[in-house]
Amino acid sequence: MNFLQPIGNVTFAFLATIGRLIVFTGTALLHSVRSPFYPRIIVKQMIEIGYFSLPVVGLTAIFAGMVLALQSFTGFSRFSAESAIPNVVVLSITRELGPVLAGLMVSGRIAASIAAELGTMRVTEQVDALTTLSTNPFKYLVAPRFIAGITMMPILVFIADIIGVLGGYLVSVYQLGFNAANYLQNTYDFVEFIDVFSGLVKAAVFGFIITLMGCYHGYHSKGGAQGVGQATTNAVVSASILILCFNYILTGIFFAVDG
Amino acid sequence: MAETDFKISMRDVHKQFGPKVVLDGFNLDIAKGESVVVIGGSGVGKSVMLKCLLGLLTPESGAITIDGENIIGISTGQRDRINHQIGMLFQMAALFDSQSVWENVAFGLMARGTSKSDARDIAVAKLALVGLGSEVIDLFPDSLSGGMKKRVGLARAIATDPEILFFDEPTTGLDPIMGDIINDLIVHCVEETGATTLTITHDMQSARKIADKIAMIYNGKIVWMGPTGDIDQSGNDIVTQFIHGRIVGPFQATAQL
Ligand SMILES: Nc1ncnc2c1ncn2[C@@H]1O[C@H](COP(=O)(O)OP(=O)(O)OP(=O)(O)O)[C@@H](O)[C@H]1O
Ligand SMILES: [Mg+2]
Image 1 (spheres, rainbow over the protein chains, first blue to last red):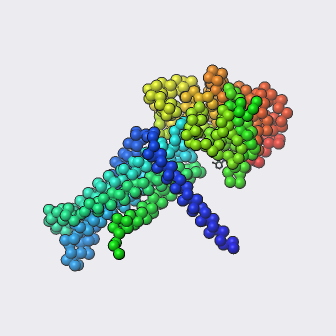
Image 2: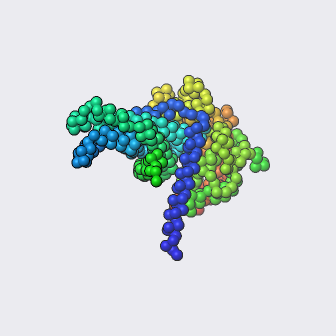
Image 3: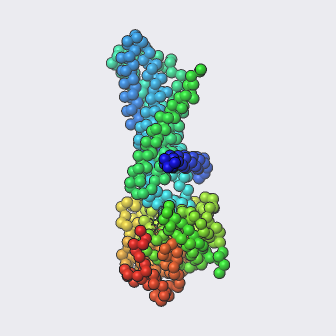
């Protein structure tokens, strides 16, 4: 029965990781809502996550909107359905592409940098030093990043939505010959509150996932520079996969297909 | 003395990492106001011992008390209260590299609600005690030398005038003169403020100067502990070999691997 042993070991290791992650999440959330708070650090993290992600998220969004208009046009012109392009663009951007692309880009930037920073602090004993200086590392390091991630991602995605729609508009009007006023009117008439709202809720969840993965892998990293590198990779990969996974789940919840 | 009379007491403490046993029935008692120096080979578990006292590592078994109070398995709130009276110098200094020198030193003070300007004044005074002048206070740790980092770490440890001080190799990496300044500083902390100190060192000259008692750790246990004056007549082969730095003897450097 020896072949069962590795399977058992892997299962136990997996369950142990899940358990650790749940405890970590719970502790972090608890400390995020209990004083003392560190407003200066929260603001610093908000600037880091929100403001400095703007260029990369904006660029991603504008190209996504542009290519979306272009592709829809090649497809839809076969059915003479070009007029649906504004609708397709705004729906895809607000519901899916805005949050998902922003989530993936920000996870590359932020999950990596959080994991690297906390991981370095862990292996150089700075996390231990915090504890000895009457400062809870969860409150001081993890909670501010959580709060910043959950609040800044929706704002980022809202901006990405606008820029993405703008990308589609530019291609449609200047390349595909749409009437500018009609395009905007169509977009405005078609988009519903739930489209944008669901995307922003997704963004908040993704912000949570990104900062959680960054903090978790950084906090538990060990073994010097190599361990920190490993933690950084794990943070980005796990955040990206979780984002895609939760995107599907959330889409299912928001837009449940009535059987 | 009863167990509860000691400021710090470790009884039959066991700590291992996986199969590697580091502390194996470790006993150590330190009276209030006493300065104890722990010596021992590299990798025998001296830093692990301090981390157990700080609650950063949890031993598998055994009892640890500070001021007669059990500290194993207590809540973070209780731990915070105990850490309030402890100052710690980490072996690698563990300075916060996102903060300037004075902010590092003032960190514990500000965490306890001291105003920024008061905390800065205290930090400058403590930095002066470790021989660092005003030219370094606004630098960041990455522009300091190893010895300077150590001294900033030392200033951070004593900034709040704690009742208990742990020093992990305070003079390693310092020149002999600066080392002696630090020795004097530690003696001062014990004599003037009545602090209880536990210092780890490889530096026998420093140990002789700052210790009331010296303890030798070997194979996860304290194998000898006695007043500093007795160290040369310890009658313990391991101690004798260690303080003379001899290669041949019961102490096997390779046995630690
Ligand atoms: N977090 C950890 N995980 C696994 N092993 C550890 C950990 N911390 C310490 N050890 C091991 O415990 C042993 C004792 O380490 P410790 O740092 O206490 O040595 P030390 O006595 O302080 O040595 P030195 O004088 O070189 O600083 C070492 O073998 C080390 O590998
Ligand atoms: Mg050590």
